[in-house]
Picture (spheres, rainbow, N blue to C red):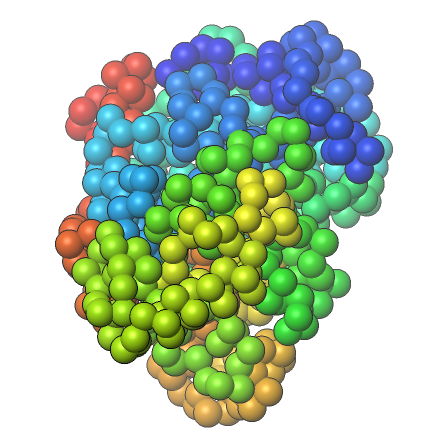
Length: 538
């Protein structure tokens, strides 16, 4: 698209091939195919799509981007750190420190905004190529494989534009969509490779709504997905549920969420506590099935968030759950085991200033108990002796092979999220009993004493759903945009975060009165796009 001509056609000029079956996914995937060959067969079009599946998690710098912030697997923990749900305990090796301080998305020249923008426009450009060239080459849309390809292409374009417009524009529910500037809307492929000005937020959402409707339509009668890396009709319904929720289309969001979770049963206690490292978990609707030989290791999802990953980011900076959210988990809820509130603070560089020994850690009064507690955690979870621990450290995300750097799957969508979307939408419709019924099914799967009737008003339901999302979806990348939808600011006072570490990210006013929630457009885009000027900058 925008910065360089070859970004527009990258989806067909260079495709990272991950194959179309489980067998292919177990082999080394890197290859490329020519523009002429990319659409010469159905199999090659699946290879184009597989390049997108892999781009969601892999370390492949696209034109105009850097490998240091690769794919959705980087931005999920980044957005949760910025949104205040995933707490950093120290600066660690520096990764994401600027993100949580709110210094990256407010800087138009920073790599973070650059990668977020160009990576998502890569998805748009590739989807455009698939959609338009299928039509131009006369493929029969009754063919199940063609319907699968189109279903995925339209879903990816809807997903990418929703990511862009909800990040680089004012929130739909807190702004004026019909007049607020959105993002450039590109629907064509090929010469003359020109860009477009910013469309309004409403126009962009109109296209997203159309694309996801087309996706769902094409998935009806389509061939089945090979694995959960591939988008499916359930994933498309899940994207629709997210998009509808963002717009306040409550009834549509509830219906789509219920459809998305169909066939994906909620996790048992043992499965929930197993580490969220496998796409095979029953709840997983959409995930990156990571290929061992093609992982990005020290820029992978688990490198950022897993307490067991053997990297300097986690050894020196165990991630914490927000203390307020965790302390509200009842003893009857097995998710109380997702964090360790009494883990000893072994890091002398911990940002709360209480780390290094039993002398500074208020939870311990002698050296033996302090180090015995650390050793017990290291042994139980398979960390190395170089790993530090910290009170309220999260142990939700655990490697299948702890203490190493082996890759694990990256989960993008679960049925638990869909239950919470459906409940929120019904609550916003003032359907109190309907919201309670959905929550009862979900909540009782986590808490043996759960009683949804305790939340008898719309306000009580919404507050409870906000808490459920903070606990259930911790680390999965939703908190930043949740704050925008709810028009809530950030106040980390009682979270366990250090104001010294977080700085501007420690407290922010609500999005409706605070444009710092809107990411800067990359300066490179302003400079290169003839349809944008400095006046278009956020």
